[in-house]
Image (cartoon, rainbow, N blue to C red; front, side):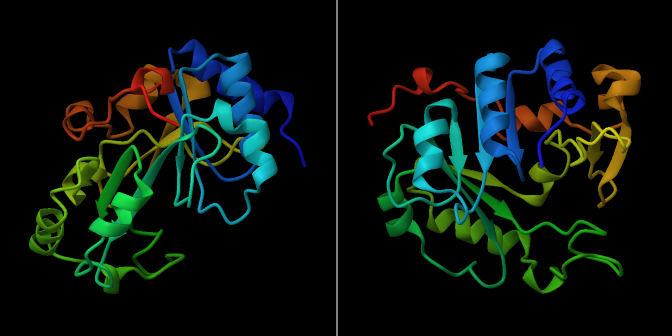
Length: 232
């Protein structure tokens, strides 16, 4: 299975709308990274993966094109800035992760408070049941205070997470009403109008995106490896 011309065109359309940074989750990661970095010359291309299906050959081919690999790796041989995402919940809220995070030495450690999204991890027709993972604001704050010595820690409470991300739906197929932003303002993922139908600026108006919160949570930072001056 490969992406067709229409799917590539959808990504190119976002570039024309002044897209600067993109994070991919799912299939076709290598080809998407290559296309966005070489063909579109995007400043920042990142991927999210647990690393279980990514082999050394993948990093040999695509590693230099990836800005941030969001996962947990034992070492960094391919000059990829590496970020860790941790969802803090009932089962890990009392842990002390300072030693392990220090050893892994990520450029950013995003610490999320477990968030319920109706239809996704909560509610009658959800794919997962996350209610038992939910922690209080005070529990989350206690975790942050315990790890306050970690300089790369970026905390994201439920309040910060909910409306401060621009998420595109997963459908790149021409057979779906795709390229819609998914807003979480009402506690569920509500799709905007399609970017392909109304353009980016109008679609964002229906996305629930909170630009002020995006900036407050540190969403805009150094997006190029060269600017980070990392020691490999």
